Each structure stands twice: as structure tokens, then as C-alpha cells.
Image (cartoon, rainbow, N blue to C red; front, side, top):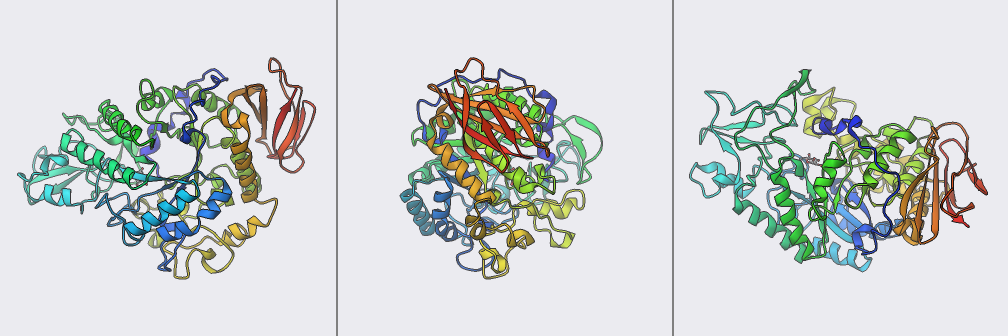
Length: 561
Ligand code: GLC
């Protein structure tokens, strides 16, 4: 698990408890992204059209019908730009092209036009904090102290011979400073040494990066997921970071609090600027925002919602237990935030939700329950490929098999992120139908039981469950537009809530325990009398206001007066 960077966000105790009911009608502007379900594609692992073992853009294009049928409105493609692939694309060497491994710009245009035909938006991943050390800007910058690009990156003198400018450690291990013998200075990298940080205090950097977004908007992109925005700025005086606690992390570094190199207020000026450009193109900005509480989340929405439309609420991904009380608290907090909520349960950096919540016995039931939860809340949802078929995190078992450099470096404490990036499981043929070559990461054995082809035919599968929840979400007015209202808040086993819009209501009841449960819906004030089943798992049903739920059961019903 990708830990270091997340630590600041783990302060679960700091989640603000807010009112349990949201303002009505805040989706009335019908901005396309408010109703959208986004789907993250890790392009290396989705579909391999040319059988070289690595996924590609033509592969994605060949699966658009699948995504459309699933109910996806937008795909976020993790970086597919030219890159030495040190961090599998998060080290970009040219922002205005496609890495040959994934295809060409013509393939991108083909994908964009095929997606448009199906009303699927394309979101690209914009790596804003750093470039690759092979980017032409950096190559020039490091060539001499007088390079026109010198000030595009963060170069500083060491404190003394062999001593970096300060104590900052990289979130990927080791000092955050790399010595360059040619110019006798250090350059700063929050992530790998091959990912030098851009100097966002330089207006030329800002102009060049803003222009890149314009370039892609003109090519049909509907927005960006902004990578690692917390880390854009550093304290100009480079003050040492305080040490949080004694001991060493998986990389053997001290536990630092990133006080002087993350979440500086200047970040917000840049986000406001990027938003202005986005607004000119009806585009959406999603943020990788590791906020510690809702107050920080609100800062990312900006005053009057002039920054990120969709800062990701990772606090939701930190509720790593099936606890109605914890989810209630977190949903209420985000629901009362100043912008439109964004829910996500898995991505390419964290252990898949299937394993984080699964108990090893009821994992499929729990996967359905988690889908029923975050896809029926008020807000946009971001899925992660394979989540809809119950893909399991499958980390390497031997250090020599690890591909993700943080896993090689931090083994065995840190096994890296390969486990959540394995190839998509399309069918039960060899390599799960992902490729005819040797896949870049092994296909987990679960492809025999969890794959798109077989699950499509099984009415009880995780996939068919996702399809039905998404279908309901896209067609039901209360789920599309309604406010959120927590009910039965003292129930320790079942999480229940209503979504209400103009007199229409939907109830969602989720049994987070392995025992059958009964709930009498607490419906005072809302004028509803009973619930009519729309989606229910085995042994889950309603009679009037009474709902019975099987172990980990789900009931979603339309309220009747
Ligand atoms: C973000 C990405 C992660 C990457 C890092 C450095 O956290 O999600 O995958 O390694 O940024 O770019």
C-alpha cells in the first residue's frame, strides 16, 4: 500500500461531524459532471489490442461498448503520455503526445471520436507537480546554471559538502534532493529522483502548463484529474520539516510531517487559474487531494466554488471497516461540504476495496454492498477498473517479481502497488482475454471465477449488480438530484438513508454485518409510508416500513406515500 503520502490524511479523529441532511436542489444546474459516473482506466492493464503484453488506447476503444452498457459516463485514463515509465507514466517526458506503447495521437483521436459517439467523456491525468527527468525542459535546466530553463525546477545549493539543502525526504524513499555534479547543485523531487518538481513560482511554468490543458481541450478532452496537487509548492526558505514520531518508515526514513512542502496556500492560486481555463471549455477538474478533514476539502472547492469541482474525498477510502457509524459520520461531513461530493473507493495507489472490506468469506456480497453505498450517494462517483467484477488485489509474493519501484525499495514492509494494477479480467481464456502475449503483470488466478464474460451471464454476479445499480442511478430522479438524509442513525449494523427529490424518495439500507438484520424505517417528517423494492440482494425485502436484510444484504427501494 502506498502509505507515506497518505499518512496526513489518516487522522480519522479529525473528521468533522456535520448535519445529516443536505440542501436540496443543488444539482439543478445539471452540470454534466454532477450526474456522471467516472471510471478510472490504468491503461497498461485494461486491454491490449496489439498483443505486446501492455494495454493501449485501441484496446480501450474496443471496450467502449462494455463501458457504455455498464453505465459509465466518463473515463479517466491514467497517464498515457510519452514517459520513461519509471513511475508507469507519472513521469511525463512530453505532455502533448501519446507514448508509443499506448499508440499515437491518431489513436487518441480515434478513441475520442468513438467515445463521443457513445456520450462518454475523456478525462486525462495531468501530472502537474513534476515532469520526467527526461523531459526536454529538465534536460535543458540541468545542462547549466545559466540555462533558460534553470528556474523551471527547484535547484539549490547544499548546506555543505555532501549535505542536501534541508531534511526533506521523498515520499518514495530517501532524500528529496538529488545532487547534480555538472552544476554542483541539488534538485528537488517529492517523488522519485527521476520526477523533478516543477517550480510553479515561475510564471513561465504556469503559462506552459496552462497551455497544455488548452491543447488537450481542443482535442476533445473534457477535463483532467490533477495528480498530486497538494505538493505543487514548497516553502521558499526551505525550512526543515518537523519529525512526527520516532522510528523509521518502510524506506528507512524518519517520519516527517510535510509541513513545509505540501498544501501551501499558493496551490489555490494555481487551481483558480486552471479552473478559469477549464470553464472556458465546460471541463471538469478532479483533484488528487489527500485532505485531512472537510475544512481542507472545502479549501479545494475554493471560495464560491472557483477551484476544483471534484476534489476526491479520500477520507471515505480511509473508513477501512464496515462500520455504519464511521460511514454515517464521513458521509454527513462530505455532504455538508461547500461543493459537490465525490466518492471513490479504489484506485491505482491503494488496496482494492474488494480486499479492504472483504472478510474472505462474503467478499462478493460485500463488493455489492459497497457499490450500493457509494453509487447511491449524492455526488459524483469514480470507479476503478475491475471493481465492478470483484477484482482482488494480488500483490507479488517475491521481491524479484515486483514492478513498482517503491515495492522493490520498501520490500517487505511496502510491497508496492502492483497488486491493484493487474490486468483486467475479460474472460476465462488464457491471460483473461487481456492479451495473447505475456502480460506485463501476471493475471490473478481469480480470473477463472471473476471475469466480464462469465459474470455478464450470471444474474447474481457483482457485475450484474453494478449494472443494475448504475441503471437505477441514471434513471431515478431522487438518486440523480435528491438530497441525502440519514435515518435510523443509532443502528449499529445497518446503514440506512433516504435520497429525496420533489416528493420522490429512495431508501437505501445496507447490512454491514454477517447476521440477518431487521430495520423499521424511521420515516417521520417525510410523508412516506413504505418502500417498494427496486434492487435487493438475496433474503432482503421490505414489508411496509419493515426491512429484512440477509447477511451483508442490500435493499434499495422507492418510497411510497
Ligand atoms: C500520484 C499518483 C501516483 C504517482 C504519484 C507521483 O499520487 O496517483 O500513482 O506515483 O502521484 O506522480
